[in-house]
Length: 314
Length: 303
Image 1 (cartoon, rainbow over the protein chains, first blue to last red):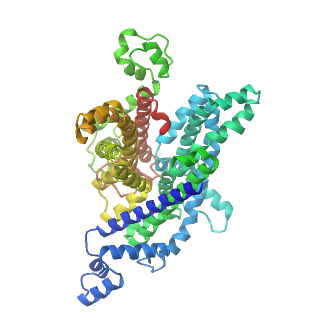
Image 2 (image 1 turned 90 degrees about the vertical axis):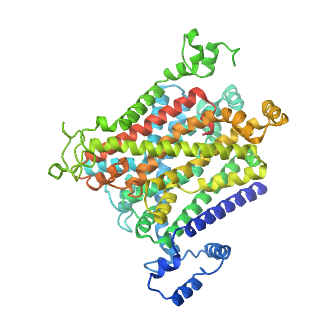
């Protein structure tokens, strides 16, 4: 177990390192000299040299990279260009909104998708299975931002049931939940299909295993077999899928936050892109990569904890 | 494979046909495909989208850029099938031309990333283990970037453009193809015919191109069909955010963007911009999935 754990963590650290390296290279390959961009054309050579020294821009690239890594490791993501506030502070204000949206979206889709997948696996080729099959392809195929727009069109503009903009009054839980419904619906809809298909496929495979046949031979109740023995194993690939799909989930929340004007990481990246506020963009990208790596790590460890067979594969 | 009678092969491939047509044996896969209602439906949708995009100038009723301020925000009518936007441009015509942008991005993006991914994947699978490990790590690192976040960061640095959208699409799709090509190459690496080629002194280039590639490319082509919706969605999504195709060029994303701003008064623009997008994604998904079920049922699980 420990060797699996250490290998898996090493892999995540290397992925984060590579991602930071890629980010660093991209930032340094932008056309233009950062000093003259920051100070404008009228700065004297002395001021430029002083600024370059302060920002370590006069050092060789590998040295700059070491400083960059050191700052990131200490949690120093730099300062907002305009307000001069710490980037980490700005992002930590926005992060909870994104996490709540992501968890709500994945939560409701799991509550519907997993039972649907079970139902269609238990009775393959039944009416329920066929309808689920077509619906899941449909929900996967429709882009989540289009779901957001059409949901606004139907539920906010047409029926006037749900609000369009914002995350609700701070402190008013009811209002916040009220504002969460549409974005969470839009982000999660595609996942209903994904989860239903995944659970169906792995459930079908598990149901044909010998030990399930033995359980039938022992005369166990069908319900017991499905829920106690089959689902427990069939759910494992789903956990991996949620881990791997977390990046896609984040892309969904970015669109939902922008379209519904909700605060969050995606919204702040979008606003900062329009304002060309690079330190915040860089910090936000790092945070999203960090979140992705942590989520995949957790899901992999969870699977290896539940299924000892997986540990040998890495 | 050829010893198995046709009927048994049909059953093995999961079809529910009762009376196989003996004369159709060489077209077994085609017959299987034509009996798959989902696949045929997908193919029809894809044909509709492709034809309407290619022949957009013929089907169009107006000039996509012609302003007609007197008729701005007109409701759908016989003259303007989907109404007009805030500048009086005909939405139906713009939707047709938007299809050209979407399919252009899809065609270039998918084919370039297929070629690069195939090459890298075969090298990773056939080459030395250290190279394989490095390439795998790079694929995983690229995959760990949420596409839209990567795209937003790139646009911030380089400014919005169609070629940037394509580059992002290509970079983020390569790992998918590469991983698939790598897995198939690995499983072929120690088969007799490859070993025979090696012992006859064939170069690595020759083995990869002539012996491995034909066996690897099938699943990748199916993945390509299923990748089209992803690419089209990224293009439309970025253009919707104002970070992809720039106005006045018509793209489904920019049409949705313009429609979204006036969604309360003129809902038909976001409906008209969204329908072709859904038809495209549904069509290619149905087509890709049925092709996969017919040609390569093994792919179903690993996805």
